[in-house]
Image (tube, rainbow, N blue to C red):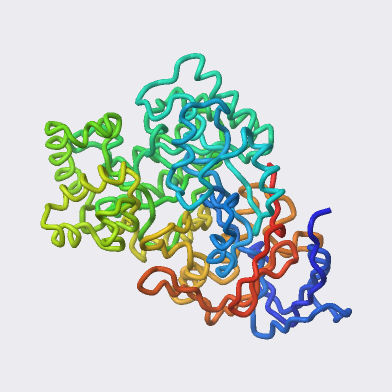
Length: 537
Ligand SMILES: [Zn+2]
């Protein structure tokens, strides 16, 4: 028997039920982890929480997360900042990364274990999705989780980070491993086409993966090959099509060809040149949707995003790492391409904030922008970039800035295909991504203060619309019989407060319940292992 909470009556609030329907006054009764009644409910001897003047909404669904690497960690506090912003469910395994799906005997297992998500568990002591699930169910989850299986993880276990096509035998194994994970309940497959080794996969491989996902009637989640108008992952063609548009077209065409349901990950516009392509990009999505392609995108409300410093590098340079870092010819070519590429993208050193240099020499500069570090150490920004890549063994983490401006965020928030996500995780040290602390309060605050969406439409995109997209049964809306994932917040006050280090707690979130158990109450996290569910698709 799984944990069931006692009863709670959230009384006299404003019910925003997650379907997009208008708010209505009412109370909500929670019994045994489920929503027992909504509306005019009289107290029946359960604990009553007065919600006068407050919104009662479904728990927020982080539609694009990497927190799966943290859920097997010994430290449940990794989840506190998400609890405090009202997140009750994560959709994880994105961008090609998942902590399962690999060949058990792989000699490359350490590459998966030491991926982007350092603070998570460093040894993956399981050999399949089912075994991973058993470990987590034994350990107990603080929130609900749905998982994609990462194409990158599977491919890494077969061919490491080698820049090549898979052999016929590896190819079969890869498809078999992805197939197994989906059969065992993964929500679909995620691609990470800007990361090693996804960046080395050719279109015929992606087609094959998409057809497999389509066969399971699941989702293909895609971190595309480019998010800026110029990216090293495409060849440099003078006056060519902006790379971010090409990347969107490639994925929409893939979905069109294969019929797969596509989740386009974190639609961003990195660099001011890409901002000029927003109309065209939105047009591509609209056109594909009109032609019957089943596509949605997720987004975040900050104009910065966390990733690895090495995502800046062109494919040819990445393929020859770490040698390329020391070859004069490679460095000279990279420097030239960076100068031209940055100009074409409207992005450059001033937009690169080193959050965690992952090497002792540069650790004192965590949180600083590349040009500032360069002047501190009396080197050029390019030299510092190479030096940090080298000394961190390409592990250095960054926040890239100028992904959006506020008008673009408003516009995307309003788009019918948009659902909301944080794409964030806690870093073991250094500067933190504000998205890990304030994403959902910030979406609500934007909706209110910039009038980008109504209260009910904003809530819908972080609850019911996400539950629909990922086919989460009996979650994401406030309905009788549904799981009692619930957030109580103050619509007039809710906002993020990132502060200097990005780590400030949001305002206005008052109570959070996961499957009927209170996990946050009046500013205090009381998250417990075992209240979250491992969701299967
Ligand atoms: Zn990604």
